[in-house]
Every structure is written in C-alpha cells, then in structure tokens.
Length: 196
Image (cartoon, rainbow, N blue to C red; front, top):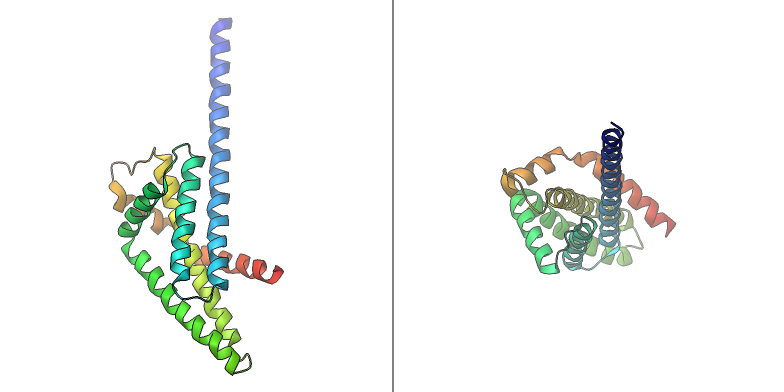
C-alpha cells in the first residue's frame, strides 16, 4: 500500500512539474513573440528606406522561427524556417499580400513625406509619423501572427495535424484580435520611440 501511494504521489508531482514546465515555455514563447513583433515594428517605423522594411522584416521573421524552434526543442535551420514562412505565407495569402502592399505603400509615402519635410520646414512630419506608426503596427501584427502560427506548429511536434496547414493557420489567424494587438503595438511603439 505504501509503494502504491508513493507511486501515485510521484506521478502527481511529475504531472505538476510537466504542467509547470509547459506553462513557463508558453510564457517565454509569448514574451519572445511580442518582443520580436515590437522590435520589427520599431525597425519599420524608423526605417526611411523603401524595400529595406521588407528585407529586414523577413530576416526578423526567420529569426523568430529559429528562436521558437530552439525554445521548443525542435531546432530549425534558416532554410527550414524560410520554408515554414513560405507555407504560412501561402496559407495566409490575403494577410501576406496585404502586409506587403501596405508596407510598400506606406514606405513610399514615408519617403515622400520625409523628403517633403525638408522642403516644407517640417509640416509633413505629423503625417510621416502617422504613416510610420501604421506601417509599423501592420508589420508587427504580421510577425505576431507568424509567431502564433509557428508556436502551434512546434507544439504539435512540427506538424500541422490532420487539418493540414491552410485550415490550421486560418483558424489561428481568425482567432487573433487584430484591433487590440495593433492598438497595443502602437502604444508600446510610441513608448519605445519617445524614450529614445
């Protein structure tokens, strides 16, 4: 009877330890995803160079996938990360295309407003910052979504499950509250930029 009770106790302790470990990993993943999304948003906001946003953004997203894969004990190479990002981009076609068009459009607008700022004595700086903030929030949201999708993929043992990538990714994206995530990104971004 003592042995049986001891085994039950050990099993209970082990279950609690596993649950706590998963909780800590989940929290670390949340922090990593948010900090990476915010870092990308800051980089996009302050970058005045057209297309550097896109190239830099892909590098940040690859870094996020690599970091998450290490956190979950399923390390990926950069090529494997790019392949996963490609799968995500294809499955989220509309989101990926929207981010690209918004990034290019707002990046162009930022360039024009920045150049016009010199000619107008700074009159175009307010619209420049508004465009930069919006572009940054969109880029940050895309990275946040990529992080959530990647985490789900890794939690499932680097598998999309029975539903396949498109259905799984669509479900995750639809569950995200875009408005509140972008509002939080804008708020955190303003705080980061004003602190210098």
